[in-house]
Image 1 (cartoon, rainbow, N blue to C red):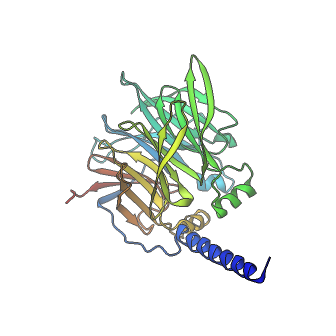
Image 2: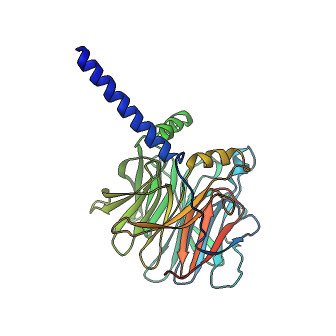
Image 3: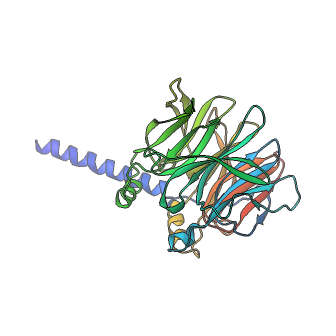
Amino acid sequence: MTHLARTATGALAAITGAKYLANTAAVYGLTRKLAPRTGGDARRVTAPGLIGVEDLSIDDENGIAYLAAADRRTARRGGIESGGLYSYDLTQPDGEPQLISDPSVPLYPHGVSLWISPEGDRELYVVDHAGGRHSVRRYGVDKHRAELIDVYAHPLIHSPNDLTAIGPGEFYVTNDHGFHGQFGQAAEQFLRLPISNVVHVVTTNNEVRYEVALKGVPFANGIAWHPATGEMFLSAMTRREVWRCSVEADGTLRKIAAYPTDMCVDNIEIDAAGDLWIGGHPQILKLVQYDKNPAILSPSQVIRMNPRTGNYVTVFEDDGSLISGCSVGARWRDRLLVGCVMEAFIVDITLRPER
């Protein structure tokens, strides 16, 4: 290699490295400025045992929100795993979430998805990590109860985060890491490697099939099937993007657009009008610090996104003093529910009318 070639190669490597570092700083929120707003009148909603509502799903017709709660901070410090499923009746003024899962059965939930059959039956699909095992639990639900129907476990579901149900016994679940070991997963996150995936689970003639539907995702997090368009929306968390995907005839997903945002995107919910509501972390390093020290606040953000264009507006943004570590935002009529990773409450906001 000539001196000129070596110089050019070195310069290219320096430029590439500088771009990578600048992008990393942006992704981690080191350069992100906050513009706090609540979008309306906010109140904290509590209930016994309601800790760490990382995800929720709303029954729009009946005005019932289903909440998945898990006390992650206690478990990560060697304490007993505890968690449960709650219903929150949005039609009742000043209502309180009610435990609907069996407290005697170990449950340590993560992502949830509500599916409603043409006959009106409600089923709640839940990612569960109880006892260090990973599975998806399928429940029949209403505001008073959650009755277990089935449990899905398979080697392909090795790091499940979120899921979206599209039919009876059929759902897509995200694995947020490609590596299985703790060291590999840490490196994967730091380097933002695109090696996580989405798995399609389908039941036909009492046989359950598990197949990888999409590979090459940088930290696959939230996922939501859009019933009006038949498309899938996926959070590529460490790229701060929402991926719009087509659902192919064989059940695989094909990325057709990537919508950039200004936060690390977490869970995705879809309202009655078809808009995407996405909770996330504008300064993700603060979330890492907050995990270790609750005194360090982790800023929260919720955006509303047009599924066709990717254009979005920030509806809720907070420095963490109202709610830290927001992971989900979901709208019902003029209400916005905000859940988070570790706090012992959710935030219920009565939104101001749009101008």
